[in-house]
Amino acid sequence: MKNKEIDDLLEQLFRQAQMQFGAAVKGRWLHDGDLCPGCGKEITVTKYKKQDALSLNAFIFREHGVLIAYMLCGKCAGLILRESKKNPGTKLPLHDEIEKSLKQAFVKHLGN
Image (cartoon, rainbow, N blue to C red; front, side):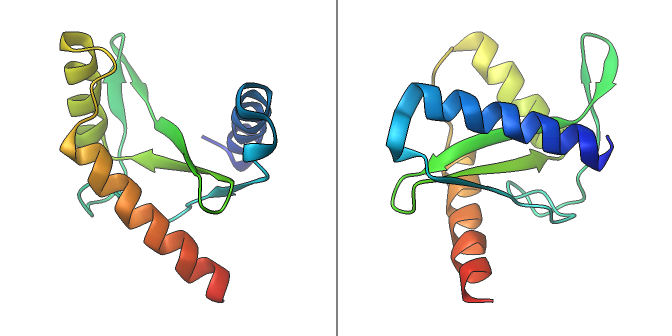
C-alpha cells in the first residue's frame, strides 16, 4: 500500500470519527512502525476474501483526543477477524495489548 493511499484512508477514518464523536477527536496519528503492536512481529499481509490485504485499524485515545491508526501482522489481523465473526463486538485481550502498546508509543512520540 502506498503512502498516499494510507494517508487518504487515514483522512477518511479521521473525518468519520469526527462526525461520530465530534470534538472528542481533535487529531490523528499513524503508528508507522514496522512491527505489529499486537505481537511485535513484522507487519505482513493477511488473506481477506481470498486476496492479500493489509489490516489498517484505528481507535480513539480519549485522554488525548487523538485517533490512532495502525497496521497489524497477518496473524493478529486473522485472529481478530475470525473472533469477530464468532462474537461480533467482543473485545479481545489482544485489543487491550494493542491499545496499551500504541498509547505508550504515542506518549513517547509526544516527548520527541
